[in-house]
Amino acid sequence: MTLSRDVIEHAAGLLAVADADATPIGQLTQQYPQMEVGDAYAIQQVNLAHRVQQGRKVLGHKVGLTSEPMQTLLGVDEPDFGYLLDDMVVADGSTVRCGRFCAPRVEPEVAFLLHTPLRGPGITAAQVRAATEAVAVALEIVDSRIADWKLTLCDTVADNASSAAVVLGPWVRYTDDLDLPAMAATLSLNGIEIDSGRGSAVLGDPAEAVAWLANALAPYGTDLLPGQFVMSGSFTTAAFVHAGDTASATISGLGEVSLTFS
Image: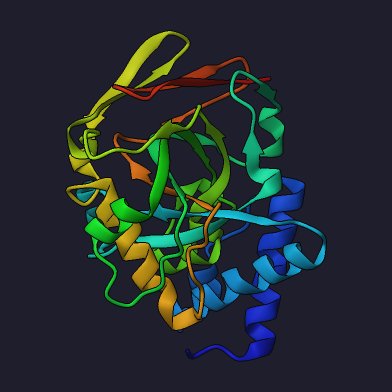
């Protein structure tokens, strides 16, 4: 890391205020050009610790930047990760205020519910499948507390991997008959299909994304715990949403979820 502890705390505070006020800030990497990925994760962890101290509970984790186009866009060759808290889970079919976000977008994903802990390094996709109790179709609401989505890898990592909220569908018991890479997803806005994709877009297999996460969390002393869920990455592009929109995600074999923005 290159940033001092005081600077890391200050940057975390800027993001926390931006999130609370739904008012984006300028790129942190413009303000702190020496920032490294380790600094960005340290900023993320400061805000996680503060929210847990305020009574929030960690329910899961997210993997981002799993698709080749997104990695190319940010000039990186690996995903990133963030946390998911109890106040970030939104009920299927519900309505949320668009104004609680800065510039929200939605993505269809598979969520994994674990019955066995996963602790890296060395976790494989096969071990992920063995540790999975159930999977579900999910709609992630991603948001950027950095203005205009002008991001580098460090900016999005510091900003909790641009995570904001998630809608989970009913859990479907996982069996080896569920071919996650072959599953097809559609993303729709107001009943019109925006994009579609397959699970193979997520590092070749969504289980590979969960394995990557378990291994990436190992240096932080963090395990993936039983009862937690993991958002494994988007099958498609991320679509912007605005007040009045209804977004839905469908994944073959898993069902559909939707959310309306008021």
